[in-house]
Length: 218
Length: 218
DNA sequence: ACCTGAACACCGTTCAAGT
DNA sequence: ACCTGAACACCGTTCAAGT
Image 1 (cartoon, protein in one colour):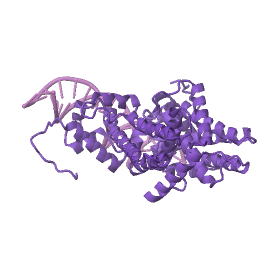
Image 2: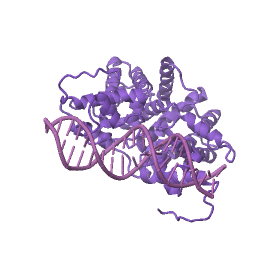
Image 3: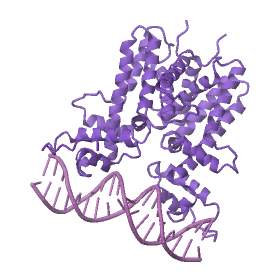
């Protein structure tokens, strides 16, 4: 609707694949995950409802491609937190957490698509591999985890983080931030933070507690 | 299919509501969340596909009722962990975490229904209130949180847990365990634990790390 | 009151057919 | 190669009608 129906002559542009993904992102943010149908995406992109099957095996493949976008953005955010705080591992971790949670709250449907479990990671991975020429592996969903792992390892090398296997510590941090992100984006809290500032302050607070731990030391 | 089509004369039993919920649970564990349609539930319960509307506003209302079952079970598990470890707050917390994660892994679709975000908590709450005569509030989705909060407060009173606002500490713990549960039940880990024992051991390990915190102390 | 069957507007997916 | 339109088997939901 908001888009110009520009008849550019190139009705079969090799770009239809990307057009479909963009249309999907638009519908996702407008109508939510429930309102995202393959037929609607096709109509938004200006093609027949069977045209998407030229570029995607099925609906899940298209959704996977959309989710990949989210993974790429998450990876970028984590890497930015890394670069910005090379001398302060704790601030690095907190920045990363805030970035993650902020993304989840601002694009709840995309994040739900990424982590809601309706997509099998195998399918996403498959979609990644089928289309990893241009952007070599920048969209690999597990890359976000690798970026977090790098933050953890860096903190340990600096002597700031506890000396346990990095993968275990990364999983604790991943779980904590991911859980908070899911609870907030799913509006599952009784007294949810209202503004973006409140979300950030809460995330900061919870991250600090994660740093010091639950046990009381006298 | 597995059920006897017993024509008991009571074709309109006031019990249809519960029959529908049971049928829903069965289909959920058999066909997953995608395969759960209102029409299929009705057929499984042996009524026409419009009969459910006598008892539920819409599909989401039925799903909410099914999710309530999960919240009730989660609450029971948390309360059991509480009763069992009155003198050991740390063991109490770890038991609670293991129970949560184990539930999530053994009934991934139910948990996805509870926390996947496709249900608005408002609807679930609505469904709770409409039907809270028999089981007064034992199904309130926020009761699980209250049970966790009780564990946290108890640990603080025993002097075992750090002295910060209980709600903040509860949110950290909730987030961590919830996040781990979601990552595992969604099969989003690169090297997931295979057996139930491995799941439990991993959860135990992560919970211990949560207790001591991320920061290194010399 | 409780349930049914037809009907409506939508789905995802397949397939023969067009250029 | 790339796209279309008809067709199929499913949806959720509404509504007049039956007991």
